[in-house]
Image 1: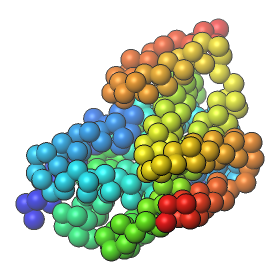
Image 2: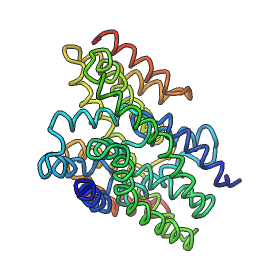
Image 3: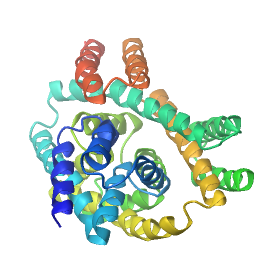
Length: 178
Length: 175
């Protein structure tokens, strides 16, 4: 129980400093879970991260896997709530403020100005994720590169569901590495 | 036409359930391509706000989009939809993964999904960049953000350090 409270307190404090998203504080999560409390070892932490990447939903749900490990289903919910609650309240406060000043010229400029930051971060996390995935292909990293490039082209040039490419990638990986 | 809280819930439930490899690419696909509630430029602006605010950016973006269309109820509906489905699935997977996670075929399939998910994000970024019509200066700032993030500069520094330049570029564009 005290473990779960410590995990929640740690995640709640990371929640409000995670500018750029949950991945901004993944190193801090590692320190909290592996170094400070020893709830998981390095390999367990990496596996939890891979599982959350592979499962559907926002990547921040990795904290649910940490919570599950510490306290089962209750831990899954509590950890997710601790990581998301404080940030959600701040985002809602901002959204209400934004509605009140709707249409203000300075707001339109500020929002447009964040677009290049948003796009740069999307591209960077895509490339970092793709690079991290290469290690899991073992002796065939070029296959990983090809899957990433083919999916990027498919998504950029068609309106078809990316699930086709995710499924094809899964089957290819299962055959080549299985 | 503004979607209701109920419509937002269903849309975000699908985003969450199909959101392999992160929800942002799927949220764009749903809001811009399938429902037509936002343009690419509008989605990119809301995503930018979601990233500048602390916390999970898919959730922050959902709150801003939901609140913009249907107030507090819309924000709550979007977040519940986004997290509801995946939490159930994750609870099931966490148990299965302990049992089968070490199997080579499972590992291979996960490798394939991870590589494809990276490509999906890349393709989405390319599409959004093309359709939000950045100026030359904005391209430069975006490229700098990309380079610094690849160089592993901490994200809060990048966001807080380069957002003012982005806003300056937007101000120049408006004049």
